Amino acid sequence: MKNTAVLLIDCPDRRGLVARVAGLLFEHGANILHADQHQDHDLGLFFMRVEFAIGPADGAPLEESRGGDAARAGAFDGNFDLEGFRTAFAPLARELAMRWQLSSTARKPRVALFCSQYLHCMADLLYRWRTGELACEIPVIVSNHREVEKLAGFYGIPFECVPATAATRTEAEALELALLEGHRIELVVLARYMQILSPAFVQRYPAAIINVHHSFLPAFTGARPYHAAHARGVKLIGATSHYVTEVLDDGPIIEQDVARISHRDQVEDLVARGRDLERMVLSRAVRWHLDRRILCYGNKTVVFD
Image 1 (cartoon, rainbow, N blue to C red):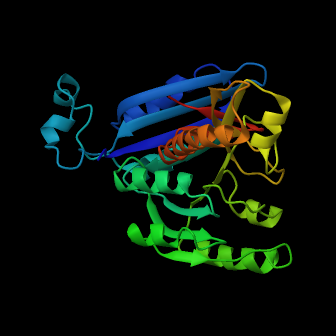
Image 2: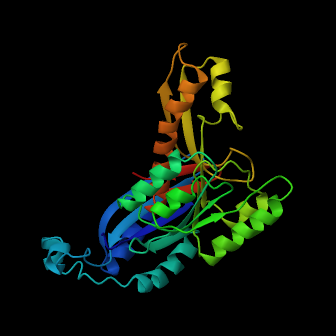
């Protein structure tokens, strides 16, 4: 496992930002491994992601983690003071009006998975988690049906069934929020959870609820997009993963993919092809979020390579 930290920044664009950030990291002895940046020239905004070593990788000898000549020159001694850098960075961030996040990749975010009766996305996420592709903890799976209970049991994850109807939605969400708080959840993933979350629920997890929609948004919003796409006679169908906001199917888009179809395909064919797209776009979005690669601004995202 990598023993690194990630610094995410967005702020008004100005000259010298990269030099100021890199210089402070250098002063504190950071060994920068990856750095990427983006400018929105129309809005005058700057975005940056920096990943740097804070210690040797798990199981690696310190000498191997130091990086040759740079290490011998004393650029990185394998023991970076992350909290000391956080304290030193705060005044620079205030001066440059930065929004910023600093976190160690060794700390795995705590994720709750929600689904209803369709299990293809849930099964895919759990397999990727078990094989180590998704670096997170999953302390609970929540559903308004019991179809996923056996799958949760197979992976040894506690399952909670919270039935929800229009009449009981307030009570159901109160129970769900209590579960999330009790498990100290940081990210909620809606793996085909077919319930609309209330504004109050969404406000508790800003830019921390990821949904997959079985359409290439903004086309064909709502509950039956494959039927709508078939009726319209489109030649491409898609799937979209996005952050959830108070407006249905309108949050910042993280990832999308498409598949070509023809007049020979029926609704059932679109649904079958779409399931593969849904699995791919959701797993990518979750992995990028866990890897601290996404910044939101307005109703858009920057997704760093």
